[in-house]
Amino acid sequence: MQPISDVNIAAAALTAQFVLILIVFVATRFVEIEGDEGAVMSIVGGVALIAAAALLFTNQLASLWRPLLPDAHVGLSLKLAFLIAFAADMLLALLLVLATGDSISSPFTPIYFLIPVLALFLRESRARVLAYAGVIVILYTITLIVRTPSTPRLLPSRVAHWIVAISAFALATFIGLYTTPR
Image 1: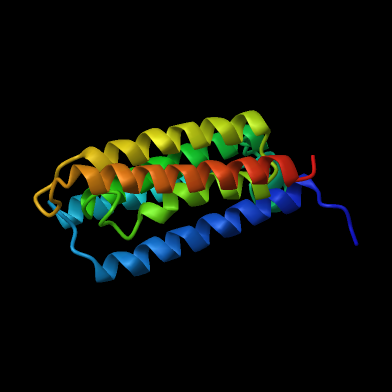
Image 2: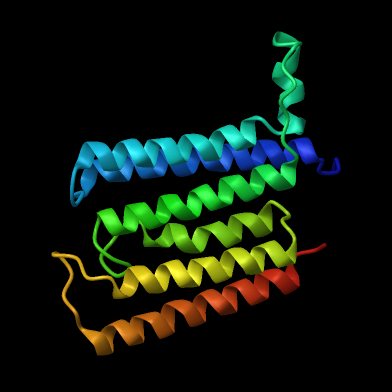
């Protein structure tokens, strides 16, 4: 078995990003978007493009396209590209959840919980995984308590939903952090 290099990790991250974008664009065809659908989808597309571009322009992947553009002096470190991509993905999830309801009713809520898992698999540091998880808990909580025209306020069930979702997420993150080889 060959060792995994930074090029492999960058390529895996770019592949995961494109699959995530594909999932989002297919799923948006089946949900009702609150507000101006064209504007929401333009923002979603722009944020998704930023995430993919950050990964495409890593030093590791730039070596693949740089011979075609020898004067291009672009290349992000893998750490910076991951930070940009994961931040964009968190923003993407937030926008999609808000545009389609809230944390309970939106089909895009699972994207929140996917981000730290991807970060673990792509060998992000424990500190970054924990930071992403913390931001996810905040975003999930905000979109759980936000009130939209399509979501009723059932406080006891929302509290129970939060307890179960965040506890399961914390457990999975803890196990992932301490069982993933470093």
